[in-house]
Image (cartoon, rainbow, N blue to C red; front, side, top):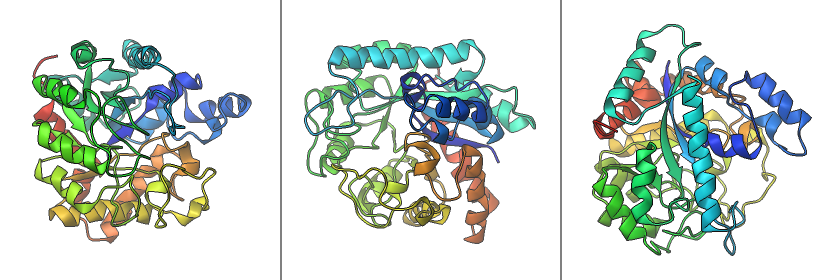
Length: 367
């Protein structure tokens, strides 16, 4: 079954580790082993463009990720605002170059999205099809000022989460607790996003930041890779009332394959223990389906739950559930949903139709 992956921070790791993701996955993994001093988890990656086609991934929300190093934020990867901007631009250029090579199709408006999805739905052989990509930004540090948003929009940026790990220039994020809210020009950025009819991604955002965002932002809401706190405790997951807020706004919640977000023992997200303090086989795809099912029960239907793989953002297959070696294994979710009584129409919703309907409704008519 074709699917849409709600979260793949592709460019960040491709550029950081110089991975050639146009190659077959076994070749990319071999290069990772050969260059283990530079790319220590290269053997573990789950995805390349040929592997996406094998996995029937018609489209993905891909990310631009660049966080400024700040006190108590080990996840920061650049030192200044200038570097965050430049890093983000390099990642944007990476996606545009893949399109020039006809490896991907950047889906910036409704017509492009509808046409691309039709080609995948109607095809029986995906090997020569470009993979669709909707460009998002995970943490908004690359945007130096809200007025600059128009520049990013013109290049294809369509959705933004204000924070990632730590406190961004705009809001509190993962690892800061639940009480910190918007900071700096967070409100102004949300207002500019509204003017452009952009999409707000509330993933990686503190509870208080989400509360304030939903009061200010009037446009479409999603969570590209977010699990359920009542199923797996911890601040990185969302409580039920926030999940319901997304559902009530007509949003979609993509669920992450990161085993830390499915492990039933609470961790301190400000001091994430690495290596993981549990073996890979302690978290399974059944645990992943628990989060899908929880959102379906909250909403009373299958119209708001989706796949949000966090693909390779969690460290590759070493940080994915027991049964997952590559993105091809996402197809195993179908049988698990069937066992729980989900109909084919429900599974199609979860695999691609919920994301499809959302973007057909909320992408602009023109670039």
